Length: 511
Image (cartoon, rainbow, N blue to C red; front, side, top):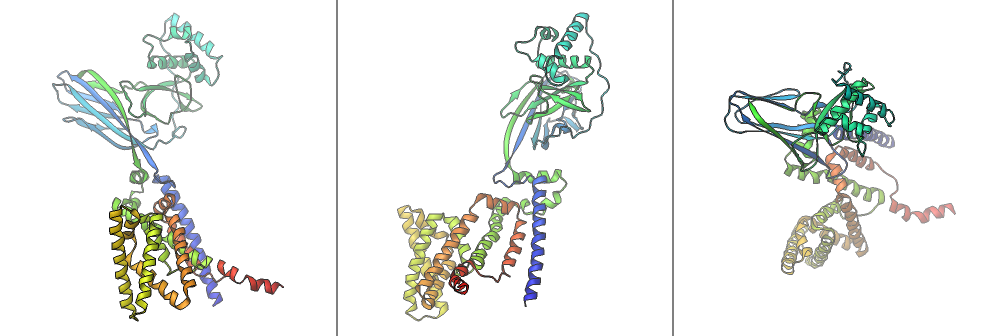
C-alpha cells in the first residue's frame, strides 16, 4: 500500500512539474505575442492619424501620391483606410497611389491610419552604407560661413553631429549660424542647413518628417527631424536639442527628399493632420497581435475569442479552482471541520454578489431563523425528505420577508438575501441541526464558525481583482492547481489542529 502511494505521488509530482513548465511558457507566449499583462485593466493606447488633403481640380486627370508611415517607424498598424469616393486606390509599400478622371468641384480626400504598440526598432534594422554625401552648391560667402561653422562646432560637446546641432541651437542664436540659414528660417530650413554642414564634413544625412502623437493635435506641417549615418547605422537626431534616438511618440512618414503628397491635375492643395487618442483593452487587442505574430488560429480557438458575455461568465468559472484549493488546504492541511466540502466556497461566492458586511448579516439572520424553525420541525418526527423540503420552503419565506422589509426600509442588507442559494442555505441549516442533535451544540457551533471563517478567507482571495484577472488571462494555471489538489489528496500526515491536539502526548513522551 505504501509503495502504491509513493508511485501515485511520484506520478502526480511529475504532472505538477510539467504543468508548471507548460503554464510558465504559455504565460510568456501570451505576454510576448498577445500583449497580455499580469496587471488588471491593462489598456493599449490606439492613435488615430487623419490626413486631410484638399485641392482644386484643373480639369485634367487626377493623380495623387501619398506617403504612408514607414514600416520601420516602430508602430503596428491596426487599421488603414482612405475616404476618396470615385477614385481608384492602389497601396504600395511606402506610398498610396490615387487616380481619377477629371473632377470639377473642390476635392477632399481623407487618409486615416490607426497605430498601436510602439516598439523600439533602433539598431535592429540593417541599413546599406550610403554613398558619399553630395556636396551642396554654395557661393564663396556661404562657403566661408560654412567653414567657420565647422571650426566653431569642434568646440562643442558630443559626437560630430551633436556638435553641429549644439551650435545651431545656441540661445541667443549665433550670428554666423543665422547668416548661414536662408530666409525664411523654418524648422525645415534649419535642418537642411545642418545637413549641408554635415555633408561638408563627409557625414551622410537626410531629412525625416513625421508627426508627434499628442492627444488632440492639429497641424498643417509635419514635425521635422533628421538622420545621420554614423557607426554603420542611421541615427536619428532632434534638431533642437541634439538628443539621439527616435522619440517614443514620433511616427515617421517620410525620409530623404521624397515629397509627402504629390498632386497632379489639381492646384492649391492643402494638407492638414489631426491626431486622436483612444484606449482599448488588452483582451480586445489580443486578436490583432495574434494575427501579426501568425498565431491567429491558436487565438481563435481560445476562450478570448468568445463573445464578451460568455467571457464574463468564464471569468467566474476560472476562479473556482483557486477557491476549491483554499477549501482543501483549510480542511486537509489546517484541519478545520466545515459543513460540507464546498459549502464555504458557495457562501463566499454569494458574499461576492451581496457585499461582505451585508452578506454576513443576511446569512446570519437566515441561518439563525432556519435553525429555530428546524428545531421545531424535529419535534414533529418528520421523514428526512419532507423535513428538508419544509426547511427549503421556510428559507424561501424568510427571504421573501427580508426582501419586503428591505424594500420598504430601503435596506441593502435585507435585499442581499436574494443572492444566497436557497438549496445551499437549506442544506446548511439541516446539516447544522443534525450535528447539533448528534454531537452537541459545541461541535455544531464550531462547524458553523469554521465554515464562515473559510468562506471569509475564500472571499478575500476570489474578490481580489489581480487574482481574478490572472486566473482568467492565464487560465493554464488551473492545471497547476489541479495537480496540487490531487497531491494534497495523498497527504497522510498530521493536520495543524491535530499537532496542537496531540501536543500533550508528545511532551509526555519526552519526559
